[in-house]
Image (cartoon, rainbow, N blue to C red; front, side, top):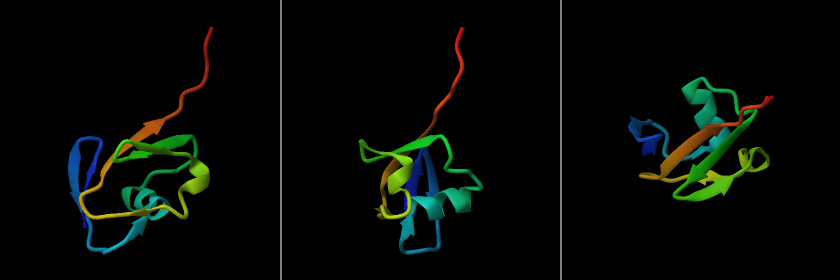
Amino acid sequence: MKLVINGEIHQFSQDTLTILELFSLLGLSPVGKMIEINQVAYSESAFGTVTLCDKDRIEIVQFLGGGA
């Protein structure tokens, strides 16, 4: 499976992946993250059920807290 993640091409041997499985393969924690797949946004509650497809375009965004 080939995915474009934050503008970079990544190749995976799996035929299917959930968002949670992708985070695991990338060594990332899903906590505080939002993901956009082909311009559709998904929150953390959907990460275990949404399945990625070959050639999906993915953007991973980290929420930041704080302020003055």
